[in-house]
Image (cartoon, rainbow, N blue to C red; front, side):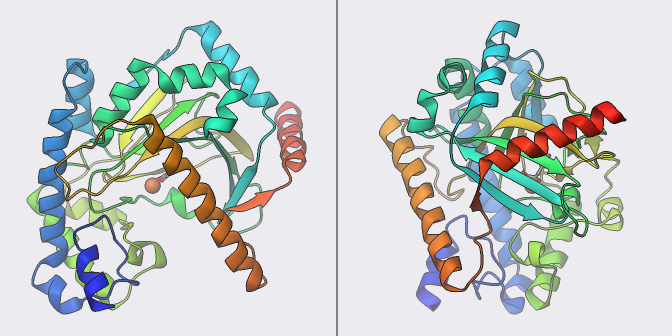
Length: 345
Ligand SMILES: O=C(O)CCC(=O)C(=O)O
Ligand SMILES: [Fe+2]
């Protein structure tokens, strides 16, 4: 595996467990992890600049300063209403992931699904949506988008691991949430530590120490390359508090999830639905790519095939894949119960 592991050093590969070079104590003592961060960050900065032409100056400044952009009233009310109603009526394949006591449901918005979501497609294909996402991801291609519903406290289990402050990857990377519901402390607002996407000496020192610890033994999420940070870690890096983005529906939040973030605590058994997009690419490649819609179709197809492969593999082992298909009628029942709970309260 050595040659494969070596080549992976120049990609977004981040697992300290499955790549023994990335997870080497000795090499991380020599600064391998930190070197990857610094090089990736420099190259991505160049790509942000390349794709930043024509982006509103204030949005650009906010993204570089804070690590996220908030666009309130992102669409005219009537367009928002149409998206909300077509999402409520969609009949498509739903996949579920169970993490702690939270259920996450996703519907991939591929070319086929888009046909039932005309208002949503108009947004996803609009110049405004695309140019902001291309800039924020440093990638000159469309993100992968889903209808995503987060269901807090819907199952018995330990605390939701997404509610611990973490950085998704060692390199800048983008996720966005176009909220179809109001977000607040009841249903867990997206929470971000402003400025934590920027490199500082203190951050690099923390990354250095963490990379050595994780190479020996770490929690499963950190070992997979999504470093978890404790309050003491944050204090050592000189950070204040993360802020919960309590925002009304029809708000678009775009974030660099290399910065520390988490799903905010939800006081209630509650849900939130959003059009969720993700765009990741090799941070060592200085070229932002070319925008061919065919590439996007291919990307969605590859994702579907990968999920199906995971389903078959899990089935062989008598288990369910981590993103397994569910019967969506249950989803409606869940929603009804949550609605009833809310009314009763
Ligand atoms: O759902 C959220 O608010 C954030 C979850 C998260 O950490 C992520 O999607 O990377
Ligand atoms: Fe995350």
